[in-house]
Amino acid sequence: MKIPYYFNESFKLEISLLTKLLFEISKSDTLCTTTQEISQKTGIPTGSHSGKVEPTVFYAYSCGLIDANKEKGLWSLSLTPLGKVILTEDEILNEDITLYMMHLMMNRIDLDDPQQGINAAWYDVFIASKYALSDKFKIDQLEEFIIAKYGKKSYFRNFLNQIIASYDQSNFDSPFSKIKVLDVNKFENQYGAIRLSAPLEYRFFPAYSAFLFLEWDRLFQGQSQISFDEFLSLTRWNLVLNWSNKHFYRLLDWIAEKGFIQVDRLTGSALLLRLTDTETVLEDFFSELI
Image 1: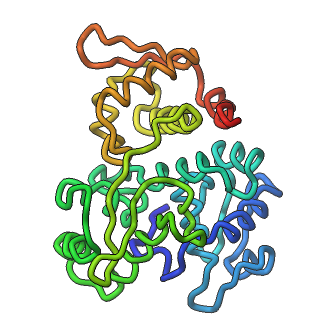
Image 2: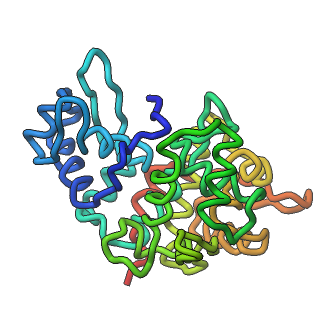
């Protein structure tokens, strides 16, 4: 499914609405229904031309929690294996590792266009703009970058404000306020932010491991051994996490100690040999929580 660039239609991600959608989808293997029926079943508001149902579906899809398709006005929605694990153990999507995993999944590349993201707006903010804007930037600079890429659109400013505000750690209403992705501030009456490094804490490692295996399945289908440098080059994971190689090697050592992979560094570049399936890795997702 292709997500429109301005997919949220000015509606921010509301975790409570997302959980209602996931719970309704979980009642069957595949939920086949219309936007209006989803609204009636979940209480997520919608109208004849706009509303929060479709933006919530797009959020859920880009976060990797559901598979989704729409044909002739009929949605076909089902939980992904990741969505099932998270809904079983964290049904209100309250754990920071859940939220960080959702953030990672929103920044996946588009297989049809590896220079773009599944969620193109998030990809532009967190990956494409990193080298152009460095780690500290203002909304003015971010908007100029987006305009240079696509041309001027009236919705850009408000949309970018919403994305940045979603990570404001000082605002508990922000959907991603519990995770350290951006240090959000106001500079000269506009939003500004500093990109932060992903937590190098063991309780997050199962989420990072799950992302590695899910993307391995998607981007290197059928391959039991891959180059980690190639993985980073394709996924830009180093830009999303803001990590150096030594941070990644610490993670890879942890994943190897779990028995999920074997790491060979004899050639200089780390070669990863897969020792287990993704289902096993997903079952371990909440294992490091106290």
